[in-house]
Image (cartoon, rainbow over all chains, first blue to last red; front, side, top):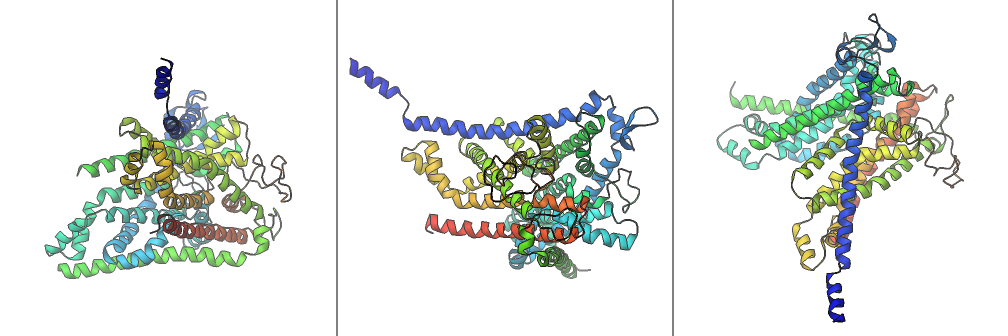
Length: 309
Length: 294
């Protein structure tokens, strides 16, 4: 009797391997949950700090988004603090859109060249060079902007040389490798028989590229461009070094202005935690966070649309 | 215009664009190396910086960069490995997994300055860690986790399911299959991913200026007790890295040779990234050959 009980207990007990399995599963799940917790914490913390301007300092959201003067320490004519973020929002969007407009034809052209026209040279020269440049730190881009681009703009257009134009040049070179290598991936994903079918119908190489390959790769190319825009929008130091850091509405491309990120990097260390000046900066960070979520959503929508076709 | 001439013009244009891009990219690399390499010397790489005088070096910043990199990698690698294993080997394909993947994607697309600000708020202010290597390492971990997780998951994906079925057929549990069969086979590509992400972490500055701080106190390289404030190992001291140093001296530096120091530091950063890239390729190939006897 005793022996059967012992046997039963022995058989019902979890084996060492089964215990290990449960542990392993638990540990890896914990690691995953940790990442999710980090994401939630970042969004939660930045959002709670960011809305403090509106909840505890009673600034209206509309004043914040449409006001043109940024001077959080001073009360404006209407007796309310001057926290108009429009100059920075305009600066960020302007610089992002301009650099994307300049970078897109170059990036897609290069991607087409290395995939369709000269795959040999593409694989040997262009691909390693772009891959390497993707990894170059943004401060290095900023430093080059400061020592090459800014003096050049100053010599051509006069003024200080700092401004949206210099920022656009720096961001253009900075997002070029990223957009190029992602566009090349998109073109690579177009099946070979699309090209063969088009060429067999008597289309020239350019007609094949323009009417077949680029059309088929459109969702991927759009993703690449939006990804580059997201990177340009969130870039802080390289832009801060060349934009001039004057929180004014940009009235020309070569006058000093500011972006959300540049005001954040220069300002957050010089304000006291919990003060209005500080809260206003966190609201800028919240706008930045929100825009990065929007970019993410756009990429997701493009991806879904691409899959349906 | 017939389609043949159109074709010729278009192809010519594409040649022009590609040539221009190569020219821009090579000019960029060339400028960094040509203006920076002449500044490099043993003195420059090892001497401490000087705030007001010429002739300072970047020794402390260089050391800080490596120390932070190693700490950040030590924290982020196990987490990323665990997360990638769960995502690829265990997770079912349902809405929970999709949500988690979205969260990871969001984390990877957050601007690094936002990650840095969160690090400032949470570690520096809330947890009273101050501007310290530890705060910086955590901020870098957040910055690094999504990329590393994705690259490890991609590495796991390259291992064919035959290996998994083989392990399970031998009576191994899933966890044992992963640790004994799948991971060893995936080591070369995981290593490549780790080195490439190390390159990105090494050059990151925006996430660090408000977490690891912007000052580099003098270090005593004979004191290896991590509890002393001047010890290089002390994780609670503020630590300016090389990338932050470039930003700092260009925006508010007052030393007379700021430009030379930035050129030299940029060259060091770029050369380090180059070495990381080559090491990743070389080691990946080498290990793959040795481990698979292919």
